[in-house]
Image (cartoon, rainbow, N blue to C red; front, side, top):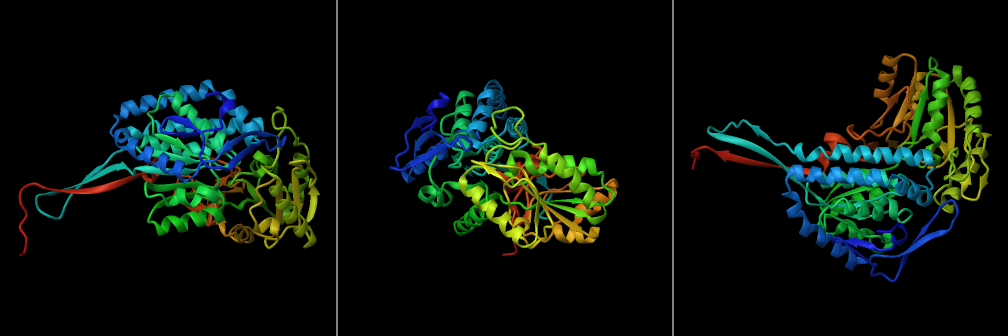
Length: 484
């Protein structure tokens, strides 16, 4: 399919126009130009997509492991051949810089490679029984049809993170891409799977507004699990609906991640890590560093060096090789962030550097004198603003890090690795890294959050567990005697 024609739904192996009278406008966040207007899907299209997934699932489930792996080998080949196209779409649709697009592309490749191993890792167990002559068998099988709701910030990777493991474990999928990135979180992915030869109905993509098909997507009886990456507010609503209809969820939600810089840290290394962890993709990552918590004895040294580093970061056109800070996704994001900055400054924070905007691009910004009760520290920023919080001790640093209702990722910097691990164990978060920044994602490692940052884990054997179910089959060898 030509990239210029990504204006249709992908249902049961066919590209068809959405049946709604409404449109989803795909807008370049940097130029503000409309890339394409996509006729939306309505509930009829959604039902058709789920029906196609149901019909394809039994055959796909029984496809031999080696055959499934052949499909994934071909998918990897197609993804590598079309790398430049994928990168181009990430730049123009998601506002990705070239550095961020490369990071995202490689992460998605890692997910596909890891998922290719799943068909031969669908193992069961044989367990002993306390009943004479009985054997307990536990069989692992796919859940059925998985509903995947894609995000706009790391659209290609985060959609693929659910799609590839779900398919590799014998499920079929229906994808609802993010309206701000319908191609990279859905339509382009469908095109890649189609070129790789995956059977019709195995993957289906419906582009539509949440207000029109969002709840129906979650409530549909065919969907056995809903996988969602996005805001805690929307994730909470999805979880509520899923609970009502007794559906499982995989929810990776918001984050307000902290880097703790202890007094014995290598400040130069901490500064480099903080700049990457905060400003990759303009801070529009669930794992981005929002709060940098620094012990007072090294605070001044840190902010002096951090200011110099941040002021060296180029903001502007994401398609230029040396651009580090690209556009925010839309005008609402800029207004929300500026309001948090303004209110925090009014309550005593100081802008150390940055703060200006040019169109959809906001200069990388650092605030000092921040306290944990200020909006810029309380809220998930999802933008290029770093808050530096000064503390007097390790204990106070841990308390500040844990003051957020979120608990996704984090970071601890210290020259004493054992100390770093002990501090990391006390921070209430699903992931945390010693002497590294918070934005890490490896396809074979458990990925997920605590508290309001989500439910469940992606990656490796944890994804294998999430997208499969187990059944106990008891087998009697001979006949059992009963008391009546």
